[in-house]
Length: 237
Ligand code: HPA
Image (cartoon, rainbow, N blue to C red; front, side, top):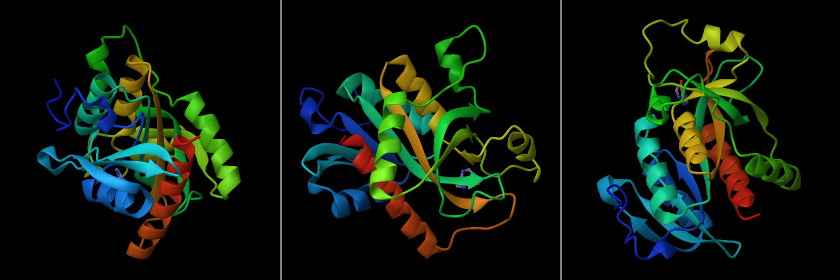
């Protein structure tokens, strides 16, 4: 039984096989209202809104994930195990660790490092490397060329803590060529791997730790549009 999504499990068709997951439920509403044809609200438990409609004729669901791995972990697990979701693309923002990866650039998490204990749920006898789906990566690479929205791909880190006490905390990740920090992708990649679903994280740089830059409201809005178009055109392939 689905505890956190209000969709009737008998009616699996409420949720599309491909789901985009922004952190912010109001962003899910914005994407649904501006990009989908005939969007309808399919989940509103705890105001974590989800919408299903079509994009260029293909059914797509946009479901808020909330912030952090516990929240993403719950929603993505239920989507995959209870609603037979095959593809999940996280879309969100990140903080870049590299001075040459600037505000507004799009990063794809090929793999996610993490400081979280989420992997303990799976009881693996060693270290585990959560990675994205090669199928979705191939599709996003093709889409990027077709619609002219470039991206950088590499290792990102999913962290449990936003407000770190030590201002230099990020430097050792940066030294390992980790591109950026966000807070959800590792849980999504682990859940997808465990249940043999496809996952991808597409994140736009809203902050840069190396330069101290932050996105303006206008930059946030515009860069979000690029990422949404990349994600939508990828999942309908
Ligand atoms: N930390 C974590 N996640 C983020 C950040 C950050 O600084 N910026 C955007 N997403």
